[in-house]
Image 1 (cartoon, rainbow, N blue to C red):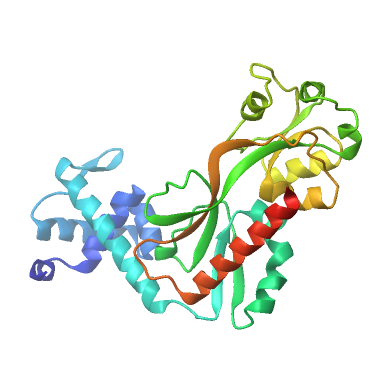
Image 2 (cartoon, rainbow, N blue to C red):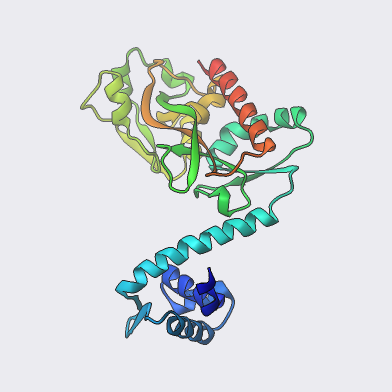
Length: 298
């Protein structure tokens, strides 16, 4: 690594930031310096490397052909450095930080947290409710729970629950339904961010080619479920979203026909990093809770 002695680290940071963010201004904001300082660091680093990484054009900084390879490796290197710093600063062993989608946190997880605390009094939970996929290797998050195909770059994923979908309606609407085809007369409330459509369930119910009449479209599954509980129509729900409402008999699964989507709930942890005891304990507890929840659900 002696060749690193010939190039200043600040210059390499400037090159990586400009390449990743696309402008001197954005790089200056991230690095906490002036645009002029970033520009000088880039120029100096290019001179030390012996080749231009950017071409200056009227529209801004454009990466040269040689610079593409340089910036890719710098990006990997600074990501590794960031992970090392995070690991060095990390973490209070008594605090477990969980990244989870807001809908899963609100509709399933929060009802159960006291039971975790009862069995693990030495661990405090911090819930980071976000729709963004967080990489535990480069953040203060210990573990995430996400719904998807299980294929996300740079993280380790472990299946928790295969997703099944089914219609839910109020008991009053359910009383009017005798067969799956009757559901076609009920307006549908739509989760606009869902990774599946009604076609998946209709096909499972023997209604391929049929269409639901759409009433309202929401950008949040929780709001969609609330609309269904208000009697505004049928929602296509999944286990963790609707389990509590079904147990409380606010909603009904009128036919018991479940369709797999090919997606699932997954644990997300850092790739290639030994698992902390608090993470192992949380995963084991979640699996027990999920099994119990699904038993009651069925």
